[in-house]
Amino acid sequence: MQVNEITKASAFGVVEQQSLVEQVRDKILGAIVKGELQPDERLSEADLARRMGVSRGPIREAARLLEQRGFLRSEPRRGFFVRALTLDDIEHLHEIRSCLAVHAAKKAKELATPDDIRTLRDLYTAVCAVATGRGDPLAPLEANYAFHRFIFSLTKNPRFIEFYEDMIWEGRQIATIVNLAESTAGAYFVETLLPLVIAFEEEGCDQVGEAMKVFLQVNHEGILEFYHQYMASDSESRQ
Image (cartoon, rainbow, N blue to C red):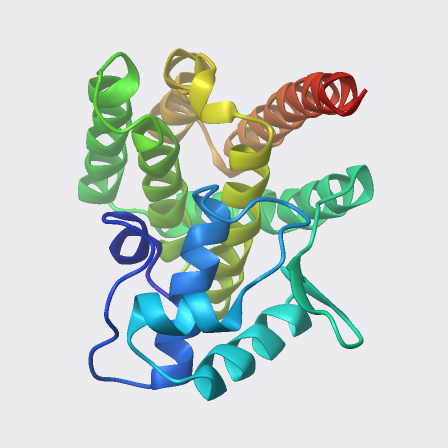
Protein backbone atom coordinates (compact mmCIF):
# COMPACT_ATOMS: atom_id res chain seq x y z
CA MET A 1 0.00 0.00 0.00
CA GLN A 2 1.35 3.41 -0.96
CA VAL A 3 0.39 5.95 1.70
CA ASN A 4 1.35 9.07 -0.21
CA GLU A 5 -0.69 8.13 -3.31
CA ILE A 6 -3.77 7.40 -1.24
CA THR A 7 -3.70 10.55 0.87
CA LYS A 8 -2.87 13.21 -1.73
CA ALA A 9 -6.38 13.82 -3.01
CA SER A 10 -9.80 13.23 -1.50
CA ALA A 11 -9.94 9.75 -0.02
CA PHE A 12 -12.89 8.83 -2.24
CA GLY A 13 -12.92 8.73 -6.03
CA VAL A 14 -13.83 6.48 -8.93
CA VAL A 15 -11.84 3.25 -8.76
CA GLU A 16 -9.66 2.49 -11.78
CA GLN A 17 -7.77 -0.70 -12.66
CA GLN A 18 -5.77 -3.09 -10.42
CA SER A 19 -7.46 -5.22 -7.75
CA LEU A 20 -10.88 -3.73 -7.14
CA VAL A 21 -11.15 -4.90 -3.55
CA GLU A 22 -7.63 -3.70 -2.74
CA GLN A 23 -8.32 -0.26 -4.19
CA VAL A 24 -11.57 0.03 -2.28
CA ARG A 25 -9.79 -1.11 0.89
CA ASP A 26 -7.10 1.54 0.44
CA LYS A 27 -9.63 4.29 -0.23
CA ILE A 28 -11.61 3.43 2.90
CA LEU A 29 -8.41 3.24 4.91
CA GLY A 30 -7.30 6.58 3.50
CA ALA A 31 -10.61 8.09 4.61
CA ILE A 32 -10.09 6.71 8.12
CA VAL A 33 -6.58 8.04 8.56
CA LYS A 34 -7.54 11.43 7.07
CA GLY A 35 -10.46 11.73 9.48
CA GLU A 36 -13.14 11.64 6.77
CA LEU A 37 -14.51 8.60 8.57
CA GLN A 38 -14.61 9.18 12.32
CA PRO A 39 -14.17 6.65 15.16
CA ASP A 40 -17.37 4.65 15.77
CA GLU A 41 -18.89 5.96 12.53
CA ARG A 42 -20.95 3.40 10.62
CA LEU A 43 -19.92 2.66 7.04
CA SER A 44 -22.77 3.09 4.59
CA GLU A 45 -22.18 0.49 1.89
CA ALA A 46 -24.65 2.18 -0.46
CA ASP A 47 -23.06 5.61 -0.05
CA LEU A 48 -19.50 4.34 -0.43
CA ALA A 49 -20.45 2.28 -3.49
CA ARG A 50 -22.03 5.34 -5.10
CA ARG A 51 -19.08 7.61 -4.33
CA MET A 52 -16.50 5.15 -5.63
CA GLY A 53 -18.49 3.90 -8.61
CA VAL A 54 -18.51 0.24 -7.59
CA SER A 55 -21.06 -2.31 -6.38
CA ARG A 56 -21.58 -3.15 -2.73
CA GLY A 57 -19.72 -6.46 -3.01
CA PRO A 58 -16.19 -4.97 -3.14
CA ILE A 59 -17.13 -2.56 -0.33
CA ARG A 60 -18.14 -5.47 1.89
CA GLU A 61 -15.03 -7.52 1.05
CA ALA A 62 -12.75 -4.55 1.65
CA ALA A 63 -14.44 -3.91 4.99
CA ARG A 64 -13.78 -7.49 6.06
CA LEU A 65 -10.09 -7.06 5.24
CA LEU A 66 -9.95 -3.88 7.30
CA GLU A 67 -11.72 -5.62 10.16
CA GLN A 68 -8.99 -8.26 10.13
CA ARG A 69 -6.39 -5.48 10.33
CA GLY A 70 -8.16 -3.88 13.29
CA PHE A 71 -9.36 -0.71 11.57
CA LEU A 72 -13.04 -1.66 11.51
CA ARG A 73 -15.37 -3.63 13.75
CA SER A 74 -18.60 -5.34 12.79
CA GLU A 75 -21.93 -5.68 14.57
CA PRO A 76 -24.55 -8.30 13.65
CA ARG A 77 -27.27 -6.85 11.39
CA ARG A 78 -25.73 -3.37 11.71
CA GLY A 79 -22.67 -3.58 9.50
CA PHE A 80 -19.17 -2.18 9.88
CA PHE A 81 -17.97 0.68 12.06
CA VAL A 82 -14.67 2.52 12.32
CA ARG A 83 -12.85 1.07 15.30
CA ALA A 84 -11.88 3.62 17.93
CA LEU A 85 -8.25 3.30 19.01
CA THR A 86 -7.57 2.72 22.68
CA LEU A 87 -4.67 3.54 24.95
CA ASP A 88 -3.65 -0.12 24.71
CA ASP A 89 -3.46 0.19 20.91
CA ILE A 90 -1.06 3.10 21.25
CA GLU A 91 1.07 1.29 23.82
CA HIS A 92 1.23 -1.89 21.75
CA LEU A 93 2.23 -0.01 18.61
CA HIS A 94 4.97 1.80 20.51
CA GLU A 95 6.32 -1.46 21.90
CA ILE A 96 6.53 -3.09 18.46
CA ARG A 97 7.84 0.01 16.74
CA SER A 98 10.57 0.47 19.33
CA CYS A 99 11.88 -3.06 18.88
CA LEU A 100 11.90 -2.84 15.09
CA ALA A 101 13.04 0.75 14.65
CA VAL A 102 16.01 0.57 17.00
CA HIS A 103 17.31 -2.58 15.33
CA ALA A 104 16.61 -1.13 11.87
CA ALA A 105 18.49 2.06 12.71
CA LYS A 106 21.57 0.15 13.87
CA LYS A 107 21.49 -2.06 10.78
CA ALA A 108 20.98 0.96 8.54
CA LYS A 109 24.00 2.69 10.05
CA GLU A 110 26.08 -0.44 9.52
CA LEU A 111 25.19 -0.63 5.82
CA ALA A 112 24.81 3.06 4.96
CA THR A 113 27.13 4.66 2.42
CA PRO A 114 28.22 8.32 2.54
CA ASP A 115 25.61 9.03 -0.16
CA ASP A 116 22.95 7.39 2.01
CA ILE A 117 23.87 9.62 4.94
CA ARG A 118 23.62 12.68 2.70
CA THR A 119 20.21 11.52 1.51
CA LEU A 120 19.09 11.19 5.13
CA ARG A 121 20.22 14.77 5.76
CA ASP A 122 18.26 15.86 2.66
CA LEU A 123 15.15 14.13 4.00
CA TYR A 124 15.59 15.96 7.29
CA THR A 125 15.88 19.21 5.35
CA ALA A 126 12.58 18.31 3.67
CA VAL A 127 11.01 17.96 7.12
CA CYS A 128 12.29 21.43 7.99
CA ALA A 129 10.92 22.85 4.73
CA VAL A 130 7.33 21.83 5.49
CA ALA A 131 7.50 22.40 9.25
CA THR A 132 6.22 25.96 9.18
CA GLY A 133 4.37 25.93 5.87
CA ARG A 134 0.68 26.71 5.43
CA GLY A 135 -0.08 23.88 3.04
CA ASP A 136 -1.20 20.38 3.92
CA PRO A 137 -1.34 20.17 7.74
CA LEU A 138 -0.25 16.53 7.52
CA ALA A 139 2.83 17.35 5.41
CA PRO A 140 5.25 17.34 8.39
CA LEU A 141 3.93 13.93 9.42
CA GLU A 142 4.37 12.56 5.90
CA ALA A 143 7.89 14.02 5.68
CA ASN A 144 8.72 12.34 8.99
CA TYR A 145 7.45 9.02 7.63
CA ALA A 146 9.59 9.43 4.49
CA PHE A 147 12.63 10.03 6.71
CA HIS A 148 12.05 6.85 8.71
CA ARG A 149 11.03 4.82 5.66
CA PHE A 150 14.44 5.56 4.16
CA ILE A 151 16.16 4.32 7.32
CA PHE A 152 14.21 1.07 7.12
CA SER A 153 15.09 0.74 3.42
CA LEU A 154 18.80 0.95 4.27
CA THR A 155 18.55 -2.37 6.10
CA LYS A 156 18.18 -4.09 2.69
CA ASN A 157 15.56 -6.27 4.38
CA PRO A 158 12.20 -6.09 2.55
CA ARG A 159 10.34 -7.47 5.56
CA PHE A 160 11.46 -4.50 7.63
CA ILE A 161 9.97 -2.20 5.02
CA GLU A 162 6.71 -4.17 4.96
CA PHE A 163 6.40 -3.92 8.74
CA TYR A 164 7.09 -0.20 8.60
CA GLU A 165 4.44 0.39 5.94
CA ASP A 166 1.93 -1.38 8.18
CA MET A 167 2.94 0.74 11.17
CA ILE A 168 2.54 3.93 9.14
CA TRP A 169 -1.17 3.32 8.72
CA GLU A 170 -1.76 2.85 12.42
CA GLY A 171 0.49 5.79 13.21
CA ARG A 172 -1.44 8.05 10.86
CA GLN A 173 -4.73 6.94 12.37
CA ILE A 174 -3.44 7.80 15.83
CA ALA A 175 -2.14 11.16 14.61
CA THR A 176 -5.48 11.98 13.00
CA ILE A 177 -7.53 11.02 16.03
CA VAL A 178 -5.45 13.04 18.49
CA ASN A 179 -5.41 16.04 16.13
CA LEU A 180 -1.64 15.95 15.73
CA ALA A 181 -2.01 17.91 12.49
CA GLU A 182 -3.44 20.81 14.48
CA SER A 183 -0.46 20.83 16.84
CA THR A 184 3.10 22.06 16.44
CA ALA A 185 4.08 18.73 14.87
CA GLY A 186 6.36 20.33 12.29
CA ALA A 187 8.54 22.14 14.81
CA TYR A 188 8.49 19.03 16.98
CA PHE A 189 9.93 16.84 14.23
CA VAL A 190 12.58 19.43 13.35
CA GLU A 191 13.81 19.38 16.94
CA THR A 192 13.59 15.67 17.72
CA LEU A 193 14.92 14.27 14.44
CA LEU A 194 18.10 16.35 14.44
CA PRO A 195 19.98 14.26 17.08
CA LEU A 196 19.20 11.15 15.02
CA VAL A 197 20.61 12.75 11.87
CA ILE A 198 23.76 13.81 13.71
CA ALA A 199 24.17 10.31 15.15
CA PHE A 200 24.07 8.85 11.65
CA GLU A 201 26.62 11.40 10.48
CA GLU A 202 29.06 11.26 13.37
CA GLU A 203 28.46 8.26 15.64
CA GLY A 204 28.52 4.44 15.54
CA CYS A 205 25.77 1.85 15.35
CA ASP A 206 25.07 1.67 19.09
CA GLN A 207 24.80 5.45 19.38
CA VAL A 208 22.42 5.54 16.41
CA GLY A 209 20.26 2.89 18.06
CA GLU A 210 20.19 4.89 21.27
CA ALA A 211 19.27 8.07 19.38
CA MET A 212 16.37 6.24 17.73
CA LYS A 213 15.24 4.91 21.10
CA VAL A 214 15.21 8.41 22.56
CA PHE A 215 13.29 9.78 19.57
CA LEU A 216 10.64 7.08 19.85
CA GLN A 217 10.21 7.58 23.59
CA VAL A 218 9.81 11.34 23.24
CA ASN A 219 7.40 10.78 20.36
CA HIS A 220 5.39 8.30 22.42
CA GLU A 221 5.14 10.66 25.38
CA GLY A 222 3.90 13.42 23.08
CA ILE A 223 1.26 11.17 21.54
CA LEU A 224 0.05 10.13 25.00
CA GLU A 225 -0.29 13.77 25.99
CA PHE A 226 -2.35 14.53 22.89
CA TYR A 227 -4.40 11.37 23.41
CA HIS A 228 -5.37 12.33 26.95
CA GLN A 229 -6.26 15.84 25.78
CA TYR A 230 -8.40 14.35 23.02
CA MET A 231 -10.19 12.01 25.43
CA ALA A 232 -10.85 14.87 27.84
CA SER A 233 -12.29 17.12 25.12
CA ASP A 234 -14.32 14.26 23.65
CA SER A 235 -15.77 13.51 27.08
CA GLU A 236 -16.76 17.16 27.53
CA SER A 237 -18.43 17.29 24.12
CA ARG A 238 -20.57 14.25 25.00
CA GLN A 239 -21.88 15.85 28.20
